[in-house]
Length: 451
Image (cartoon, rainbow, N blue to C red; front, side, top):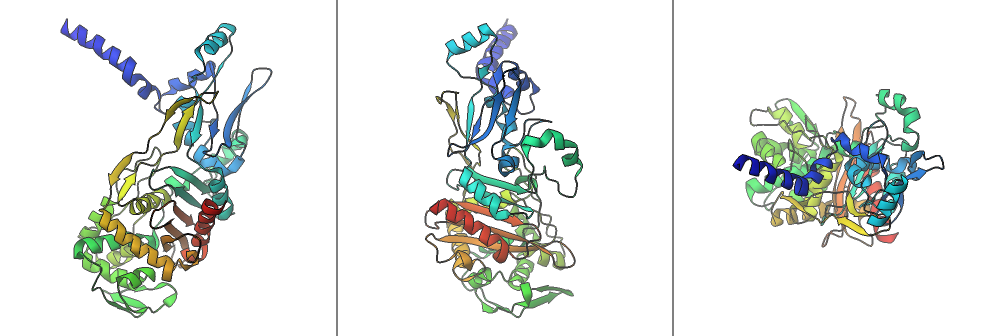
């Protein structure tokens, strides 16, 4: 009797409380059977633009349409040959109808489909379009998000594709290893972080020494240890530096020597506190990797300390680290779905901002913010200074071959006293972050404040 009663109680609990969670799993193919009686709902931007809709024709056939074509291709995704992006994440909501129950009864009586709910995303069409156009025909990715909430405002990856013509181009897209156009480089791309990793190094130095005060280094353009030489970019000689100057100058020599003193074990611990080698609070991503440890030799330690070596990170991960800095050390859980409304605009559900994890103390975040502010005021991101907003950030030039070719990085945020917008940019084979990535970030900041 007790077992029977327990089973009945569990069935009631499962159907009343847990059933929607299981149905809502993107791995649950049962969701697709809902399309027999529901027309897939729309996906909107936060500023009201239609990003995906279903056109129904007189003969009853349906076509999924993406008005912005390539611009939102990776983040919105597609609904044929499987699903990706928001089309996958919001599949349950799009195939669920909260129409007025009398309308639903009438539709069922006449054999008509009900209209699926509308998903209102956190994406801003103006920021997305700016990021897409700013990246141009170059490979790479751009992420923009709100640090205080975790809202993702823009996510662009290139090369891209047109989801409207996905079916006819599918065979070519899945076999084209040269472009990997279906790969979302923002979340799945793996790049050496270059000098953006000096943010991690600065945090580890502070945790081990308790202060940036008293640090002094004489940069002579290169440093050699155990027959391994590290040079500052372009052969620059920075001379006598304190910690703030070394960070603003992105001095490779200073940070390479710093890394040998901190040691691989210490840097590993701090990097994992910042979610390297860890799960990220995202639905689809690739883990960033960090392999340095206490047994690592001096040459690898020097390379790793300037964001080279074996370290790999995604643009989204670097955006999350930057968001935690901008938000007083607390990382908010990133999300793409702001609201779900029914076909007449009545609210069905809303996403409340949620704290994911404290990655660092408030004091540590403040100090890192001051370092990043100096990069804009007197360092490698000076092109962002003198605007109608304040900014803080870090550039990077990540070498990826023996010829010195490099990817261009920038991570940063605007309105440093009360941060509004975090931006992460990677441009493959883009050279220096200051020349290529910073101007892209500047266009996003300008759109955010002046559009």
